[in-house]
Amino acid sequence: MRLDLGPLEALAPTRPFSLEGRFEPLEVGGETIEFLAPVVVRGRVERVRGGAMVRGEVVAPVGLRCGRCLDRYRSELRAPLDVVLRAPGLQAGRDDDADSVPYAPQVDLTPAVEEAIVLELPVRPLCRVDCQGLCPRCGTRREGGCECEPEPDERWRVLADRLMDQGGPEGDGRRG
Ligand SMILES: [Zn+2]
Ligand SMILES: [Zn+2]
Image (cartoon, rainbow, N blue to C red; front, top):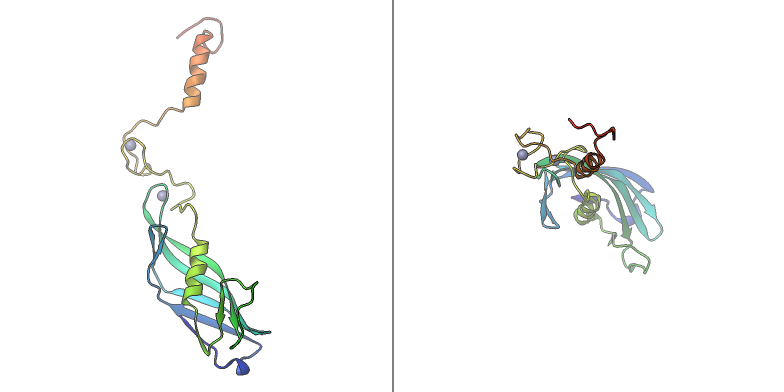
């Protein structure tokens, strides 16, 4: 994903840009992040002291794996992009972050865009906020409706036992 800027001397004070590109799958923490459509980056290039600044938004349609039901699902990630382009001959300062790259008439934004996407990946991906996950007994998706009985809630069982010990819910000794 290349951004054509031309020589720094001729760069306008501010200039909008829009890029689109296909990305190779990313390996992150043992998972493969697939790109289901081209990644789009829109933003502005601004001339600043010592170089230029790229600010924009990355929109990446990715395929993720749900942490509960393990199904693959499509998600549209939106990530902020901030890249400092250092003027030629200027060394990266001590306070500069990792997103500082040397200015060039044509800058490859691919590494910075990939980094922005990785930072925006959900820690625990979910296909739906209320995904029911897998049945702990038969291992199929709960949404599909397996035949298993729902797990009794341990807290209710303890409470029911206690009530029975006291002679039933009314406490007057009557039992079913
Ligand atoms: Zn799910
Ligand atoms: Zn089941």
